[in-house]
Length: 476
Image 1: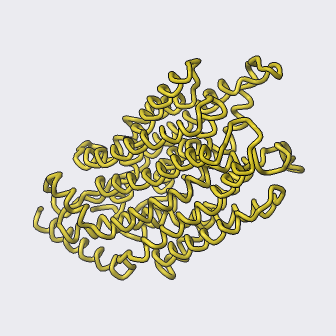
Image 2: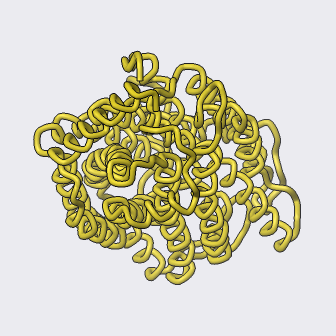
Image 3: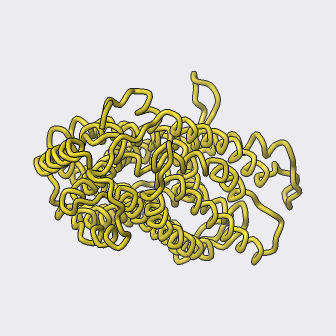
């Protein structure tokens, strides 16, 4: 427990880990369904089912990775080594996920199942240990909130990088080769996607390496006992604050993933505006959907920056509840936007994203508090299991949101690259408004029962600090 100071470089190093993950997370949440339907040529319903099957399997892997990480012992610590060991497979499989071999319909679907499943398994092997680092870099709850804020700022920064670059990269690399169509030769988008993602994968790998090199693990359990797995699992099941965060986190991810997954379709098929917007004195142009998504990421960062002073003043729980309630109300308003209401659409995107951005660092900081809560009750610490199970809940939310997006598109009668029916357009509008609002409401209902307020968290911290001092004094 010596040298507890966390430097600015270490905070940035920790943040870069989620920047790396979010480069792919944003591609998956905002473009992968579109890529599979409009580029690779898979049916929307089949992709929705694939998301459900592969992501449930992937989510179940998370606790296994957490248990492995808790029991890993190296000179680099428990969690950091996984970033080094799996950064190369992380990048390679990301590229293969966006590669389009010339198979038949069944072969394409099988390829999508295999590559996406492997990618998400490796994502777990990187992201679960990374998330667990938050619980062992510092024992101080305020430092953890700061680290969580750095994490979220860098995560959204990675998302902005991904969203800003992906379409220009696809156009640049796609223009290197033309393919024949009924309308004549066109740039090869399939080449553009695989090569463009390869560039982003290299950046993500570099970020993960920086996280490994710049962070340290400081927090040790009160005792160095080896926990039995059954004890760790029993402790988790009895951790009521963790269960509450699990439920709330699932619905936050449904809120985000349905909005994100439908955005590209909303702008391609519903919004009546030029495909390219002139940036004027800045120079160049940008697609409207890119502007919408990037504004959302910037607003997410603004939400994170606003979160810390508000949470320090009124508490994490109240900040979380207020943000999600406002996000739900604004999402309902979004439904009434017309196809030419460009400015109001962008304004609402900014306001909703400010609210959504403020929630995620609070959620992860509270997960770290539940690890302390469990340790003070049981005398055992299982940081990796708690964070991996928390990550599992996040993926279940993402899984349900992603599957719902594909199924709903099919239910509403969506047909790729065709003029959409009124029913399909109404469904796409609801997927950016009414349905996310329902997710926000359920998230709020869960968190109303969360018991760890600031006073109780500080009391838990004092008890653990005293226990660690006693353990050090008596050589335990």
